[in-house]
Image (cartoon, rainbow, N blue to C red; front, side, top):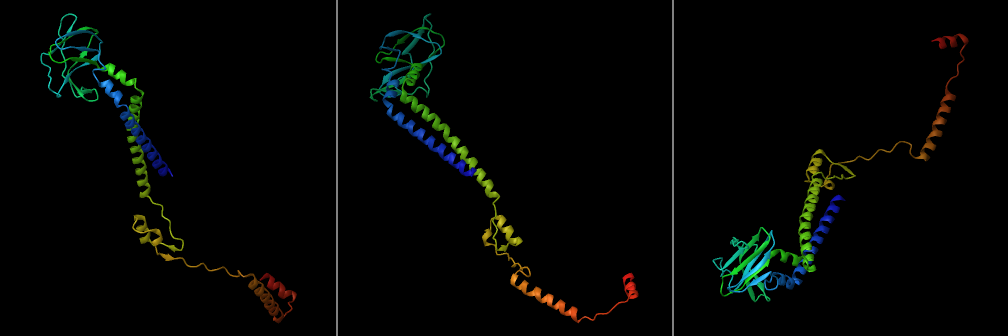
Length: 273
């Protein structure tokens, strides 16, 4: 019973996990337009610096800013003397090389490609000057924190995220329940309950084979039980017939036995032994 309940729970958890993952996939597909708007630097940015121009921006501490350009082919632009960030004191800031966490982005339904050329993590809040030394392309400055906030304002994305997280969490739980149930079942199979036949008594060899699982209990030939001998005088009619015969025999013997008279002395001697 416990094994059946465990399998039912494992099946139920697996179904729920699969349902959540399906909902997540469907939600992500239906929210692609919102995702493109969030990732499009043209629509979500804190500033755009024209070619050969500069722009002053207020940056917040503890945030990462992604710097992008429109390119024909990803990887064409490099971080070489075409971008400069200067603080209010005139000191040039050190830029970071983009990693896999800052992939290229697309806009206008994929017709425009933005390549990440650098990132900057600000430690102190203040005003910084962005100088675009490139004479042909604009510089797009995106606050990654603002992008995360924009994603949280999309209900469909929230549903997709939560469904995906809970679905991925329930799958290993279902696997653990299944493993525990299977282990319990194997333990029970190691100690099978043997049902012996009613009309035979298995021999020692047959009991050993049954215990090892080589022979089924119903296949045991063994020694057949000897039929029980019925008790005497179980038939009431015969008892009624035998008892009167015994009484008549006793009466006949008592009549045929000689009667002798014993005197007092003989009786006394017999009585005293």
